[in-house]
Length: 376
Ligand code: GLA
Image (cartoon, rainbow, N blue to C red; front, side, top):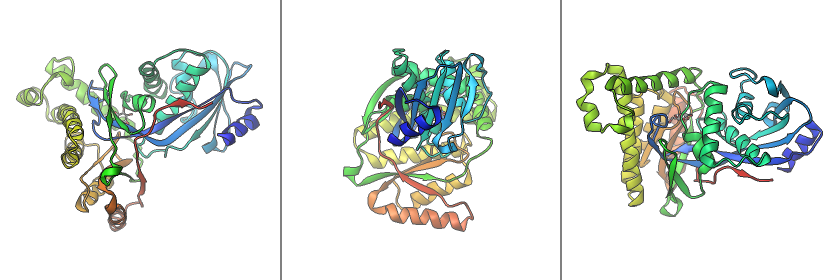
């Protein structure tokens, strides 16, 4: 933090007025249902993005990042236009736009959340900025309101039609717990996820694949689910049971059916997974996690060979459950493993990737951590 503050002074010639940070996330279960009124069960990771912000006396927003060698991107606050400007600067500027702030600002970003790894570095950045500005301007927004504002920044200013999961967990997570979030009304329940005393560990496998078409593929599948809702004449996929959905199969084309089938079954899997966690049944929980991967791979078709190989290898060498997380087409998978199998599973995944001539994967261990905070 000291380094961030001194770099800020060096770049902008004044001290920051506020410093805030927000974490990335992993998602235990509930994938691609956060724009369908579904339930999701993510937790915040310990990697955070930190932002230092101060008002300046001009009509300019000046944005710089420690990861971009401190080059300053400058834009006039009165002329903010969605989908313009340096790609990375759209996230913080989008939040300023969504908050309708009209004051000149200096912003320095320090991002620890690995980029492009499917761990939601973008939501971490949006939520750090939203948290800092909420405090600096004493705006008084609640955490669910800030989540909606950050989502609006990403949907409209950045142009990515994401759901509300990543922003919600980045803001509302608490240490030691996964966040059961109802994306219909943003109500939450903290679900203890204290696996270390049980000899378990959540391994994150970053495949290092960053699919260029992720935005198009994501939006296209989301549109299929919305088509299913309209073809069936229902208000939401949340409002139909798995059995009723199957019974109406003939009303949908094959692609629409299989994508929406993922959504309907995934919502049920989240509820099942929460019950299993509450009863301490980690074997059953792992099976539901693995079932989610099969559905993402076969019904929703957002996996890729690297994710499938990571998941299959982890399972083959003892994982209780494993699946891809996030938007898909690359990024990370998670595996719930016995801590004593950690080195074996990592080395088997490395060997399998080498044999398949894939890029070497990276590994992290994830523990449920706290959400966004003003730190100065
Ligand atoms: C991305 C989006 C989220 C969510 C996941 C898939 O991370 O930002 O809103 O839809 O994909 O579950």
